[in-house]
Amino acid sequence: MEIVIWVVGYDIADDRRRQAVSALLSGYGARVQFSLFECDLPTAELAREVQTQLRTLIDEHDDQVRMYPLPTPAADRFVVLGRRRLEERADFWII
Image (cartoon, rainbow, N blue to C red; front, top):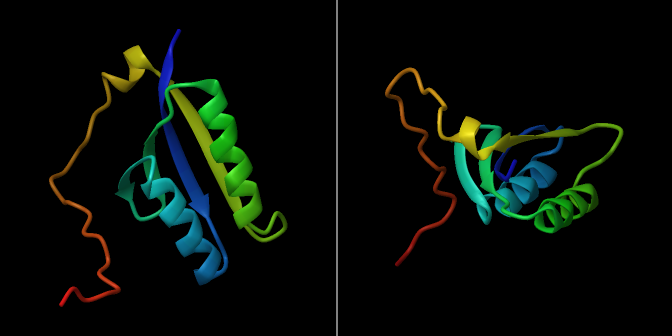
C-alpha cells in the first residue's frame, strides 16, 4: 500500500525550536492545526530524510514529534468537522 500523506504532530517546549520545526514541515505540507501538519512524503526515503532533519531540530528530552503514515485509501477518506480555517501568523511585513 502506497503511503503519501504523513500526519505530523508535535509538542515542542522552546519557541525557537518550535518555529524551526514548523518551518521545516511547512515545506512539505499544510498546517491543519497549530501543532499538526499533513505532509506529502511520497517515498520512504523522503520520510526518513524529514525524520533525520527533525531529530536535529528538537531536544529529545523536552520535545516530541509523532509521524503517522496514511495509506492513500485512508488519506482519501478523511473527515473534517467544522469550518474554522487556521490563519498563519504574520511575523513579518512586506513593503
